[in-house]
Image (cartoon, rainbow, N blue to C red):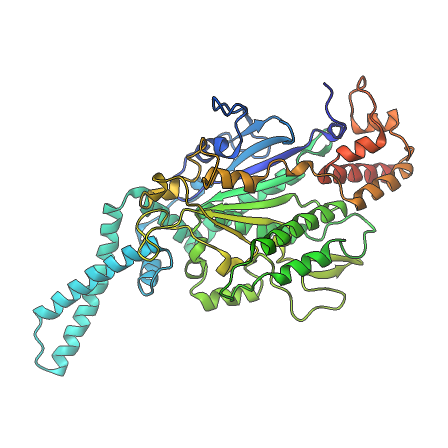
Length: 529
């Protein structure tokens, strides 16, 4: 059976990028763990998955592979990649944790699992301090001052000793993981090179996926990023930086606003603000996410090359980013207001510039989304295993939690309450997000993951603006606008012996990205005529 007409542009493909979490991960550990959770089985009754392991075509790593799942039903060919960064996080030392340890010690941690450790640490420190005080009876103010100084110094030493003890008692994967988080978020000169290299290699990977070609046409039409733990910080940084390079790319001559921009602005304004103690209603969140997807389609129709549609974070310590990413909540908010940290939905600009809007500026007559607006088109889903009990929760994931309070009410925050009893294993539950490939219903993390991936979404038809533009470009490129000619079929790369489909049927079979690729190809042909 011949490939569908859009195969003339190279069969539609989507890429899924896995960013592993903290700890000493080995190459492909995250990818092999994820593939059966992220990809539906072809035979659920016997739990068989269909994918091949092939050489990685977008990186120069000999350790890397891509897993290719062929098209099945409404799902196009899907290729899975791993961004492996653990080899760049070298030279970690226990002392890297000391400043963060004392900063967290001075305030009640937000994650319930860490509150238990916080309370236990203070109990030990205060007990030792009291014992020091008891050993030095006070008979004068001077002696009291000396005793107080000794107690403070002693408890500080106890704090460091406690940190060392924790690294010996607590499983190594937890303590080494914490050092990874602290080191990546550390802005000191010692960590600068590490942060730079990790970010740069991830951005390079995303650029290669965007620029990858098949038969001289874009190889991928959609990119999904799934990140676990610290990997979500890395993915967030990569999305933020890359968007600033690509947000203003459109076809030559495109002017005005994207058709769906006004609806997006309306849906974004309807969401509760980050500082409001409210959550969006299901209808509000659904309307916003639909507006994001429609706006992305419109940007693609106007020639923008941005392919990232979804970001899925799992068990990420971004939950307390105001203590890790910034010194405190005030500093975090200052960085958000300066647009250094991006949110979902984006923060509207004030005042509005001439010709611009809450989320746009004017560029060569066209409305362009601001540099801090990637989550105007990238849908963000956040999954985590809630800790139990809710205040001092030693059971469950100690590090994951809701993100709306910090990063915006457009995030689909999903607490996963299925997968008992394993998801309640203290701390270790943090490593189990991709460990339930055969539990795909109810409140399973795998079910929520499949819904967020939405691997069939690419096959949605082209925007009306794209259809009109394609029909207008055909005669300019030397093809008849009323029928699908043999010459046009050859231009698309259809097999010579394949039947030529009706033009209307071919248009209906295109996806948004497929139509965008065809528009690019026709424009290049016109430019060369």
